Image: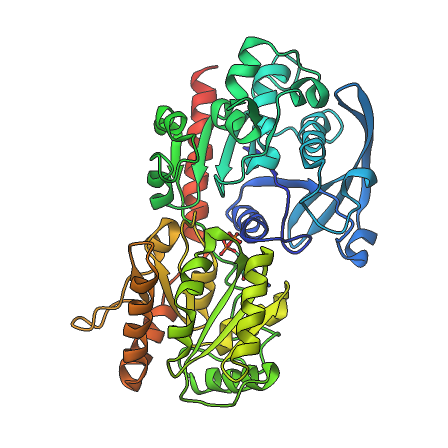
Length: 482
Ligand code: ADP
């Protein structure tokens, strides 16, 4: 079985969020488990020069984007046992950021077509193309509607993974003609139509052979009107082909025993070294060095999804507690501004690092005591799993993957790896934080919670087995269908 992973970002080449972590770790695990897999992604300008220097040109061809013919290069790189293909077009991808441009629709329309066309130019014929999020959503759709008649494409099947249903790639309806050269035929329009526009994500949900999402709870949630982003009825209609597989984390990248970003490495057996990292973090960020004062941290995109409104709403009450608060994040101006203001108002208690910094993120995961993720919705969430790996106890809202990974501490049984609350309500969150702080003051109890968290196994091994089952079920269908 041959598998091509099509994705818009992938660690260590380019990352804006959890999608890149998944695309970095899952293929490596699948290859380790014997799957013949390659990854294809855009060749961004921001990829490190020494990595770019090692890529080898594999093919050159032109891709039709509506009436335009655009250059496309395919460059190949072998990295940690996985073969990667990079789609090269300087006009589309040689930019500072990965996304956020007026022509993102065109850039990823090009990418989708480039991926499909690449199959006639590379010596790798996949049985399955596994696509991720809206950027690749038109691949299953175009394959089904336009390519499946072509030689070599007849038997290819597709899996589409929804990492976040909020971002759908909604484009003007004219994009059909302008980007894909498709007439506004009834079936094209019907399958992609989204309130007068078209949705790349919808196209994938309609056309993919199997649809997955990144946690069992999110799988259920997206079939309801509250979380379904107006696609819940379509998702309900495909529920037989919809599977929820929990993401894992890269246990090597996030390993407190070996992590080179840490001041001092540590394990669950020697937690005193975690305290050394806490002191170092306090010193680095200019906070008073206080071993007994708990640090509550967030490492996150600063967007509405992440529950920042709840934090804003009770921030003054929260910071009145004997705590220090650290936030590392970037995103909406309103939230960036708020945390800068809070840092100015409480310089000895609050530090806001506005930006994206992978190394600092690791130091925060290691140095903090509690990790706050009060998300409005959370397809899977990696932050809480990474935090647990570093012995930093998560406080989360019970939604999506947060619900599937964090079990609220039960003082009677001594079980539980964190704290959680269910309603999207600021005072419920505050109450839960206060509950966690009450246990923090009891050393023996706290060490038990920390060790429960560190004992969790969120490695990719089990999830990769579930993906393999899914791929095999498609292959069995192919054999049955001749
Ligand atoms: P999402 O993909 O919705 O942003 P996840 O929790 O799934 O959220 O994944 C976020 C990933 O991005 C984690 O690896 C987290 O540590 C990282 N991250 C988020 N914001 C920052 C930041 N400002 N600096 C460094 N890493 C960040």
